[in-house]
Length: 117
Length: 163
Image (tube, rainbow over all chains, first blue to last red; front, side):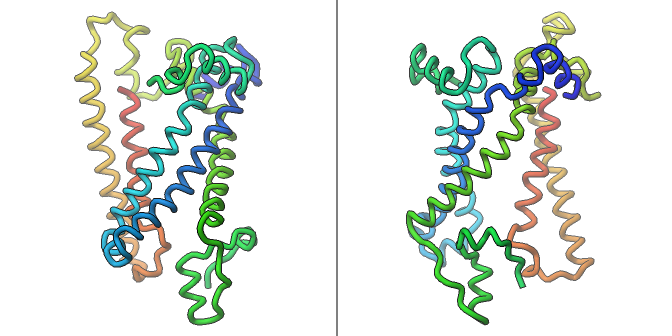
């Protein structure tokens, strides 16, 4: 990994290491919001649905279930931004940054492009 | 007494532990509820995730490049990976394992490894509690299992990544 680091810096300059910073920050901000906010929300929903006693008895299941649901929605929010990031890293000439890359995928491939794979 | 950072005062979300303390001494002021509460959770999650992932962007870039062009960027690799080098770069396709069996082998090894590590970590933790004679209540709210699972998975993935 260290040699790969050096290679990237040598070939494309240190700035190349920050490729996709915009989509990464925005994407993971969305993901974090849905993940941690969602986790607490789904936990509350589950406790309300099951009742406090039943939820306390099955607390591991409540934690696992609500984190799974939260992560599911968080990753749906993250996916388009991650697709943009990968595109920016894999094709350096694709676009200048977050807005350009996002707009180009939206225009050329539509929704399908954001969620392919 | 629980350690309380000053940041917590800006985000008055009380833990259940604090409310128990409050029942004995002074009652903590009521925290936010409803949309206010959950938007605080969401905001905190957004800030934390974007800062950590933003800081790790260079690592992410290098990782993605290695995945895209392993023959260019990953000449030096960990010892076990010598046996499982990418087909295109080092040997004729006929010498490669069939993909499905490769995947099965990788996941089997990863599963063995992560279960082993998990058991080991749980055993170590349990025995350390016994040695220190710590009552289970004194252990922080994160239970030992929640620590052991991710660490075990990490080691499992480190094995899997070679396949």
